[in-house]
Length: 572
Image (cartoon, rainbow, N blue to C red; front, side):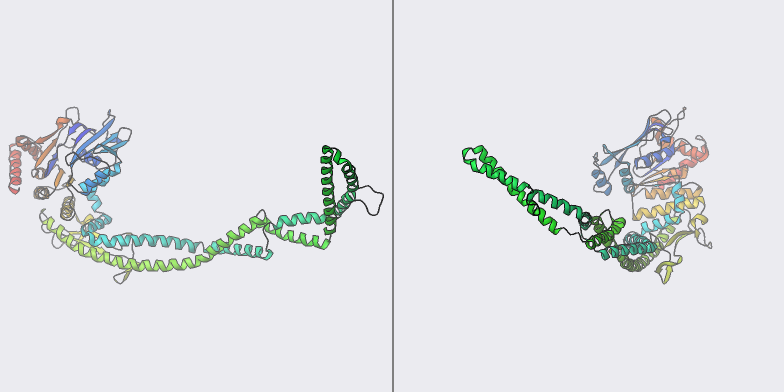
């Protein structure tokens, strides 16, 4: 990795070797920045406070060797990254303003892609991870991870059934809670539909009746006007001397028709007058028929007004006209069918809920059985690892239990509480010595013991779900003496099958490393390119002496340092 303008590091290169690399240095020298840098390359949160004061941005670049055909390789290629002789170039930039950019194989990618690769490439463990292991939820997740497909299969089915049950329960609760509102809405709809059905309106009937009422209300005036117009056109039979338009036009037509053969223009006018005569005759006939057909019956007018009043009562409530009223009735009938169907829906959902609860009971029992079996194997494997970490009498076990809940699911003949991951409450227990009762590790383990339990758990995982690289950030805190030597020995053993990077302050651990890196500050308080060096020979003995006694030139410390190195070489 190359690190620039990150924390106390100005510009430094960290060369991590295959096998076991130990990173050491004085407190505050910047060892943790190595962990932080790797975290950024793996998609960790970008904190602008990490950018060196005066710098525009912090930059971390890394070269990661990938196994051909691995899922990480395939994911990188999907993101458009190009590999360099089987290695992946990764870069992360964090600006002082908080902006972050990520590059993978020369291609700009979302930071989330780096996070996806992280799970395949590196397992990072530090003091915060130890604290996380104290939480039962993390312990359950660790057990499930160890159990593999035996838990993953039923857990996936359980999770799907659980999500569906929650959705059914929410819908069912909403339907039941709104039952009164739905009943009130249904009653209002039924009343409205019955009211409309009782009137039986026809499309456009309101407009037709309005026109008829207007005609009936002015029947006398209409009849009088029609009679006067008819008399003007066709004459008054009671007054033989009256002059009418039909007679006058007929006279004009006869006058022209007599001489039409002498002038074509006059003949054309005679034709037009003839057409006028025909039109006047038609209009006069229709006026006579109109007067005969006009109904001035007051009973009919009363019936029309009564019908209009019934229709108006509907338009006041359900629409601006009868067409809108009929549309409301159609929509209301559909909504009423939907509301009436809710009772059937409640019955269907209740049956589905009961079926899902039965299914969850079966799957929860499968999860409990699988976890119980895996817990015994996991505890046995971790206990064996603790024996090699200077805790030969410690015993680790898992408590897989359930809590009674009358609203829960049936597991093992009891009704117990359940959640998205099953009905099991998983807790890691530690008995540090014979005769000591098993207690939760949060209460029964000291800091040093917790560090070793954490390491033992990770070593067990390495055998079942290996990743290429393990990074431990001072997980040896609180440990010393023989236990520290055993931790160093165990890390060296783990490094035979994976790359192991350890940030440590313990010389007993550092002595077992295949490569030891020293992080040093310059006089101005920064770490430069020359501030991260690979220690070999005499330089490594001096650093181990400093770590042992705080004095590089102490003969006793030097002798102890050389003894530690000799022990590590002998184990190797």
